Length: 196
Image (cartoon, rainbow, N blue to C red):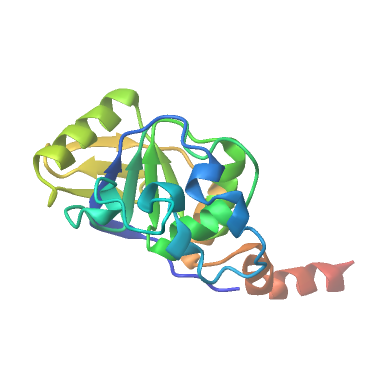
């Protein structure tokens, strides 16, 4: 299956400086009945975005109209909790292509990459600086360069490198999921089988 490719993304950010955001906060369990990816973005952070009566919470960052962009910047330990893939569906469904944090839960990290979202792990110091820059100027941007594995805070010019599994990097750069990767290499598989 083909997905949108990630190469270099320069975007404004949505800051969410909370630690230990778990998958139930990303997408509450009551929305897990669906088996297709459609519509999950509407319920990203549902219990924070809306009150119990279904009214928008004007204090939540996604409802303020100040911050927007393809990059979500979150506090340490993003995506902990249950292993629901729906959390990654909600993140990409809302329109985020990159999530930046100083630590991700492993299952969420893998689910994100499998669904076309790049999780970028930065140092706590770099993360704090990004929060400062975006808070001072909501139009501040980050540049995420996946081929070179760097992230730059354009407000300060500071750049950090990040790690990513080489296979997952190749899939994200080429817009492929696991099945798409196999299909793209079908000729190599057939050649291997023929040689046996």
